[in-house]
Length: 282
Image 1 (tube, rainbow, N blue to C red):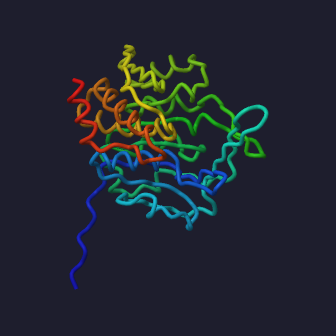
Image 2: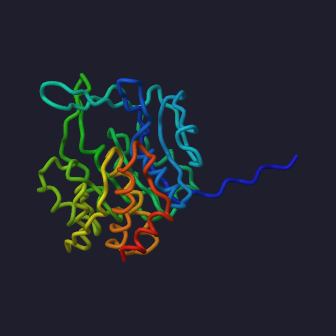
């Protein structure tokens, strides 16, 4: 009996909880890991995901072609947006167990591009020292807390000084900062490449403290869900390929702009689509 050939080593790793996102008609699988992995696959990379979730979460169906290390947890991290008189509130109903460096297979520690995408404080800050490739972070999960009822609010990122000097790129959004740009100056001093995404306005890129505006590709927004995660995955992939943060941000702007033109992950483009657009708008 002939053995099946071994799977090729992934070349893009996302660490973080895959989530259940609750909607009136049920739930959808979401989270940074989901959107970033699908983006990497469509851009021609070999993505992998390291996550914890309940055994019944159908990750193989939701992430076809992605190598998933699905570690056990009694529950899956579950979010819901609740709308009331005070506007939208985010509620977290369950949080899966945390992730640490010991959960990373030894061969995965040398994957050339790694994205740490915490959603609910699940990644230990010292995990940044676990990898040997290009490491990027999206800090939203380190910048939120929740009360006993699960109501989510923002908090200061207390471990930024530990994390940022050890990573290659930080990507965050205006929404993460909730309009308070004061912490951004500190992040820029600690990390050589910082990207602030600004929705339809594009992105602001800080390279060694120098500020650059990168304009967007005009788009027709249908569903902005996951656009920041799509941007981040595309940015890190192109940064690893070129070493040029501004070129990577322009590439990522195009990828993210395509992604918002369809529902869910349907709009995430292929590499050929992105390169065709860039060639026509050089």
